Image (cartoon, rainbow, N blue to C red):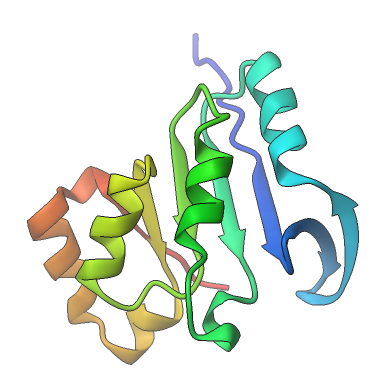
Length: 129
């Protein structure tokens, strides 16, 4: 019998966790670290963090992501503003187990193959919104 996997997706922006409708009008929900602790207690199988502002800001908040990941007791995937192998390496060094590549997959499709070759195909996720 198949076991259902629970993989919550947390949308991050402006230092907090938000809820959106069709990726518009973000509504603040709270501190993502508290949500990660709750999902850890509930034994979620995996967690996905998506920073919906990272590309617009032009940077990834590596320290903030590491703080969030340090509270997780499950594999964590991160997406948002990932455009290079160096960024992937910094995320992996900060505790992330998978990187989610979205816009960069369209802008530079070779990034997916390069990241998979360097870090392993299990650690790279291509996302389409």
